[in-house]
Amino acid sequence: MDIENDAFDCELMEDETIPDEIVKAATQATFDLLPSKSRTRYEQTYQIFKKWCLKKKVISICEDVLLAYLSEKSETLKCSSLWSLYSMLKAMLRTRRNIDISKYFKLTAFMKKKSVGYKAKKSRVLNKEDIDKFLVEASDEQYLMTKVLLIMGYTGACRREEITNILIDDIEDKQTMLLVKIPNTKTNKSRSFIINGEKELNLYRKYLALRPTNVPHRRLFINYNKGKCNKQPVGIHSVGNAPSKIATFLRLPNPKEYTGHCFRRSSATLLANGGADIINLKRHGGWSSSQVAEGYIEDSVQNKIDIANKIQKAGSSNTEIVSETHYNVSSSKKSHVNE
Image (cartoon, rainbow, N blue to C red; front, side, top):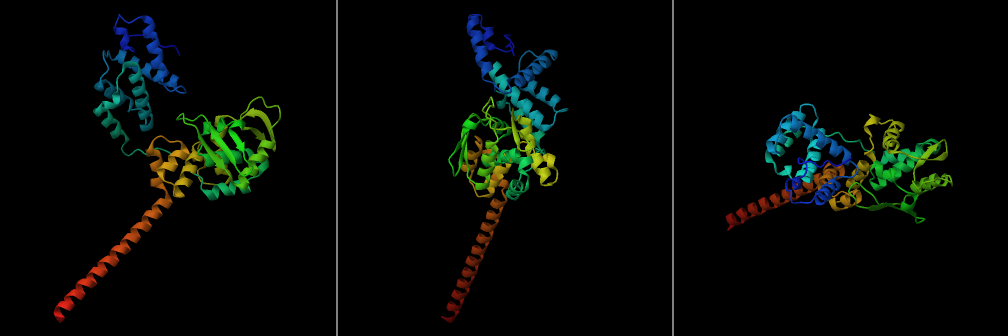
């Protein structure tokens, strides 16, 4: 998308002493700061806001302007969409106008108030019994590729786009295990993980052995049907639909609620239930924020059991201390009387 060079977007243009070449370079640099994958969406959102400002005859951007705009949008947008709009405007106004709306306290308070009582919909997760049952009971002739998708997804806490983009060159077979590398992630941090189960290794190798010799690309996942693979790479939507297919086979309730994020959430949940701390969870999933990882630990059933056991243990210890203290006090009184 072409970058608009107008006074609304660039403060530098107000200074006529700055050469056009510098202005153009600065505008391009600010445009490049936006997320590459969703840059078009950010730009479209900003253009809609600009049109609203022109319609309302807004001369300068301030907190009240943003508050009025988002208040109007909140009448038709659900909470998650409103936060998404806020986030995109924050990025665009920071890069285009050097305005940091995160410092607008009234606006922040308004957004938080709109979030009260809102609970984001999350994908359901597969437990270890579900995973093992599918890998053993589902027919390889029909579900071999789906099994390998599951193995990669839950072992590596992979997003659907990460699974889609795995290349054969990203996997190193070390006989007793597979070393899988994810070079490109949403957070631009590469990570890797190990697959070492015998059943999992055999399924991966069986699928890889069916790969035609003349595939013109290096993508690992290619279409699979009735025991045969073709050259067509598997798309992101097919990867995202895999958890629902697994849930349908297992006859789990509400299979459509097992979305493309299921593998990643299942992996984090299994790790948290295994007693992992926040550092290991963040490293495993590649999260830069502690808030997401803390959510998995907080919701961990095993973590709740451990806390309950500690409370019970602490309660028993306190009872013993109180009883011992009472006994000592009673004994002391008896000794005093005897004296």
